[in-house]
Image 1 (cartoon, helix red, strand yellow):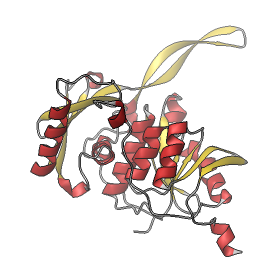
Image 2 (cartoon, helix red, strand yellow; image 1 turned 90 degrees about the vertical axis):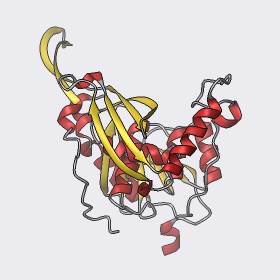
Image 3 (cartoon, rainbow, N blue to C red; image 1 turned 180 degrees about the vertical axis):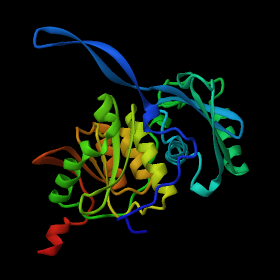
Amino acid sequence: MALNKPKAPPPESGITVDSCHQPFTVTRWQQGQMLDALDSIAEEIPVAMIYNGISHVVMMASPCDLEDFAVGFSLSEGIIQKQEEIYGIDLMMADADNLAAGIEIQIAITTQRSMQLKQRRRNLTGRTGCGLCGAESLQQAIRPVKSVPARSLVSPEAIENAVSQLSNNQPLQTITGACHGAAWCDNAGNIVLLKEDVGRHNALDKLLGAMQRMQINPGEGFALISSRASYEMVYKAASSGISTLVAVSAPTGLALELARQAKLNLIGFARPGRHVIYNQSGLSRTRDNED
């Protein structure tokens, strides 16, 4: 599918970007003076993922793009293998008059995936765990990752282009200063799609879910995130078939090891005029191929 003008799915929930922040009166100290001012505060609410009537996890998240969040989280956590295994998504507010009370995402999945999820939960019940990622042992905390299709590095010019567009495509961050962004960019570095959330993992899951729902090919571009490239961010990108992940901050050591295992192009410290290539697949750079 071409990336030039994707059509976004409708916001079934009716919850928009405006629902993700609220006005708040603050006192601001500036140039030696105390001033009363009106600020915008990012909303952070509990969001419960419920599969076939069974609660799985509660995340703290921004209350927008939750249908995308449901699809992306289900895929990146291995609860489903493809979007078609979700039969339906319904959002239910815990309190119709109070968004901060939380939202339940009721996700209907196939019987096979539901049974596998129950078995996974049963295996964890009553065991002494390490407390990391819901795993029962340290060995299970580090999940194996599949290799992504080998892709050439995108050009420095494309990375520069994407970074220069990032702030202008983050309305929540502009308003509140408290949100992360995850963007999908074409090979020229044009931002095609961007999702925001108070949590960096959530922002990426929302992006991955939106890409699935819009049938965007993960092999035709790269992902740009406004945070560090942690193990979870690399894992989520690779599990969705994304071959290049660009971060504005640094990767962790475990993230770099995972990128090597997955043969994922990993680029960090993407700032105006510079970036650092931490890992690249076996293919040579695009501009080298053109020489």
